[in-house]
Image (cartoon, rainbow, N blue to C red):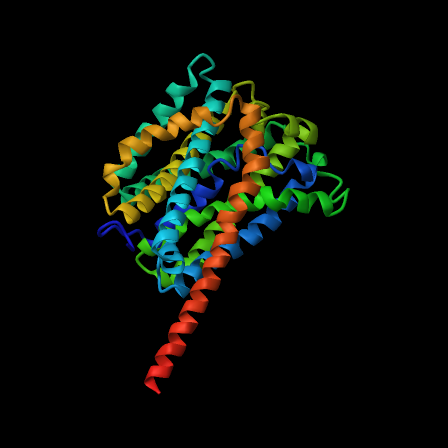
Length: 374
């Protein structure tokens, strides 16, 4: 199962997918509060480790003879345990998709749709996701190519508008390392490491669908580095515009910073552009997670993913609403609990275990074949 039928994406499309996937919600949602004004240093460290992470995923796939995640689980753990592990990862991808949908719903409730029920917002977002996944991976990659210039362009423009409207106070970034490296590393592990860079594990389902797999490692590393630079840029904007205290208290600091823009008494209230960034970012992230989860069900039950799109697609908004009672609980669950219970084991623990098991199996097979040959 190296691709869905004849579906193939180019290396450029993979680069854009990973880049937009990584910055999708990370540039809008406030993270790394432990590092305070040094959050950008934490992001530099996290992005550097993120490059190593995506390269490691590529090496794992290469070492397993270009098997994707689900094929590796079956090969390493056998049919029974492998089936359980595949279902676990599929559910994990669906769960993270529901959390991202909830992020979008909360932002819309706070900004432009305060009287609209959360259920309506998340279902409205899920419908285009379902349709895009139904059309296939190639269409998802092309859609990402189309909207990526707008996401990156708007992010850069927001920073420039803040600068020209004198809304940036770079003294807020001082003192650098005023409390040492302790808070910086506390912000990196596990929050910034698992979100968004560890989430790139979802691309172990997609990497084998590229046209030139041998270059995937370099392309993935470059994509993570590019997304890291954009996230660092967004964090510098947030701290410089709001200061540490206000950035820590607000749930969507980039949107709050955008509200500070007032240029020539004409350009103001551009926070709707931040809503657009999150909307497009959530659309791409949820589509990728949804597609990867469906591919797991397809691999296990040997039924095409199109058969699962409607039932699973309707369950994701349902659980997005049920995940938490309010926005405070939602963010606490996502930034405090989930990294330890789900992200660390599934993003790092099991892949390391997979490598060890596959290495032992390949070594055993090599020794057996060598013994027979002799």
